Image (cartoon, rainbow, N blue to C red):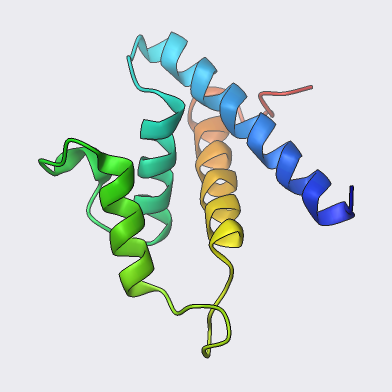
Length: 107
């Protein structure tokens, strides 16, 4: 495993732990998939995923994200995986600041 993939795994673990913590604390029925949609919408400054009438918010956010971000090889283009990792990392950090006194959700 290279250093980048190890960081990605850590980001995913922290995100999932944050989603579980926030769901229990707020007694919400949101799933990890809902949180990914929310994280991507916030990161890309899109309309919040659940605010729309889409039956599949993650699909809607991914579609809009792909239409509004340059693809790899174009100026400013980045891999979709890097976008998702940045979005979930930011979401987990914001959740940590909001409900966990800035502490990580994983040990």
